[in-house]
Amino acid sequence: MADSKLLVPELNEAETMGAETARFQELLLQASKEIQQAQTSRPESTQIQPQPGFCIKTNSSQGKVFINICHSPSIPPPADMTEDELLQMLEEDQAAFRIPMSLGEAHAELDAKGQGCTAYDVAVNSDFYRRMQNSDFLRELVITIAREGLEDKYSLQLNPEWRILKNRPFLGSISQQNIRSKQRPRIQELGNLNTADFPRPEEGPEKPHLNIWLEAPDLLLAEIDLPKLDGAQGLSLEIGENHLVMGGSQQLYHLDAYIPLRIKSDESRAAFHRKRRLMVAMPLLSAPS
Image 1 (cartoon, rainbow, N blue to C red):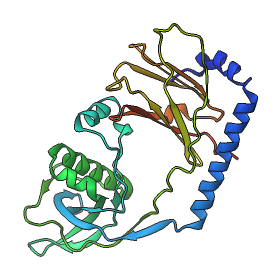
Image 2: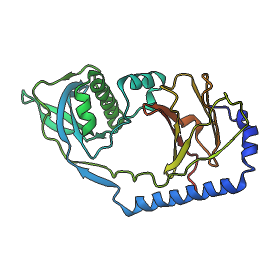
Image 3: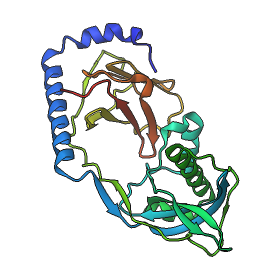
Image 4: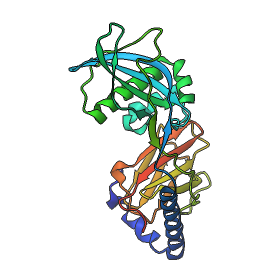
């Protein structure tokens, strides 16, 4: 992420755009209020009944542990990308890709020998589950993330060795789970930000189309359209406290946008989508008020 000192001259220029900046802040405030109203007017959770998928066996210091990998259409899918794109993203930043999943509580069961054991139910999106069935890579990725999620949530220490049970899609019974209610669709497309429009040679870099919106009171998302690129290789992205600058070694695009909000630059993440868009998530230091 960028050193904010590098962005001071641009910030001073952007601060002169008073009227447009004020309008943008007004839109953000309105979107923030709509999100908060939506959150208070609907239940915080929804009850689902996961469907069985497959079961893995491992153990902890407490004994045998079984993890039922289940699925439900009510759980949102992860970002749609090819395995090659996913591999590239994981190599660059493992935290950039997330698979939404619901981690159920422990329930006591009996194994095939009648001995006591512990089982957990982990549910993912149904469409993603069907895709995972045809991919050893995705299946192992889900199992790894599920194991790590259970360890973090319940303070477990699971054996890294595991195996999938044959002809047994689940152990015990699969209980209903409470998941967070679906987020509302984008409250409001906020359109293009104040972007510096410097004179450039005809053959110089193009300024890409930028859309930005408030996904939650403390999270700003942005889409940058890059139709001439096939991937993120060579792209550079710098995010200051309230500034975003994107360029690249190919000199095809250059974007310099002032964002009138305080961004957590160290926690911001970006990923290149196969639809030739750069997706940027920018947590905010404080929600608009």
